[in-house]
Length: 421
Ligand SMILES: Nc1ncnc2c1ncn2[C@@H]1O[C@H](COP(=O)(O)OP(=O)(O)OP(=O)(O)O)[C@@H](O)[C@H]1O
Image (cartoon, rainbow, N blue to C red):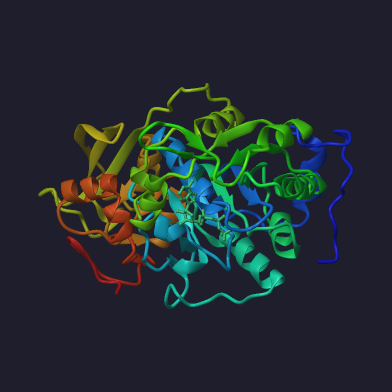
C-alpha cells in the first residue's frame, strides 16, 4: 500500500489516552476504507491485538462478545485472523456463510453473536489459508463492507497476531475505535507490548488497556496462585504507558474446556468484567448496568398460526413480545395484504425488531433492513415454533439460511408457500 498513516496528531506525543471521538484521527483514516454496507450500523469497532501469537487473543475476543451479549448488547465478531481462524469453533458454528444480492449473512451463534470468519467460506474447515498480506486485507475489507451485519453495538475484530505487515494492513482497512492488547506474563512482555502500543499509536488508535492471559494457576486445594510463566510485569508495563490493566485471566481448565466443547457461551468467569465495563463506558452505559433486551418479532401467518408464504401478501402478522428472552405477549396485527410497501411501513410503525417469514421480495427486504429490522426468510411451519427457534438460536443456524429471497413478480404466490425456487 503506497499510502501511509499520519503518525502525528493534535493529541500530543501519545494518542493512547485520547477518546474515540478525537476528530484529528477520523478524517485521515476514512480515506483508506471501504464503506460499511448500507444495511448495517456498527457503533464501536474494537480491535483485539497481541504482540505475538498464542496468547489467547481469540479467547479474549470471543468472551468479551459473550459478556456484552449477555447484558443485552448486540455484539459481532469479525475474524480478521485469516490464517488462524478459531472463532467459529468456539461457538460451535460449522455452517457455511450464505448470501444474496444484498450481501453475505453472518453466522449467528445460539445466543445471537454475529460472526464472520474465513472458515465459513472454506470448502472444509481444515483447508489451510496461505495468503499474502494484501489478499488478507482485501478479505477483511469485504467482511466489513459486504456482510449484512444489521445493527451492532460492539464489533470485535480478532486481529492477526504480531505487529508486522499483515496486522498493520488489516488495521488500515477498518475504522477501529479502540484496541485492547492481550499479553502473557513473560519477561519479553514489556518489549512485545511496546511494539503493539507503538503500532496503535502510529495508527492514531486509542488503546483501551491491557489484558494479561495465563496470569497464574490457582491450586484447587489451597487456593495458592502459582505463577507458571514467571512473575507478572503487566502492572509496571501498563504504568509505563499510562494504560489500565483490564483483566488478569488465570490458566483455567474451564476456559480450555468451554472452547474445546464449542460452548464458550456457557462459560462463566469474572476475569473480563473490567474490560466489559470499559467498553460499556464508550457507549455511555453505566458500570455494572445491564441493558434490558426488549424484542418485537413479527411473523406473517395464515390464520392457523402457520408461517404464511409471502411477506407482502400476508393478511395478518403474529406479534411476539419478548423481554429478557422470555415471551411476555402475543397478538395479531391485521395487515390486509396490501403489498410490501405498506407492510414494510407497518413493521416500522409497530417498532418491529425481527421479521421471520417465508418468501420476501428484494425490495421489501431492503426496506426492512434499512429500517434496522432483522429479516430471517425461508421459514415455514408453526409460527410459535419459529419464534421459539429464533430465541434459542436454532432458527438462525438452520432456518433463514435456505433464503427464499425472490424478486417480486417473478414467481407465483401460493398460500403458505413460495414458488420462487
Ligand atoms: N486462560 C486460559 N486458560 C486455559 N486455556 C486457555 C486460556 N486462554 C486460552 N486458552 C486456550 O488456549 C488456546 C489458544 O488460545 P487462542 O486461540 O485464544 O490464542 P490466540 O492468541 O488467538 O492464538 P493465535 O495468536 O495463534 O491466533 C485455545 O484452545 C484456548 O481455549
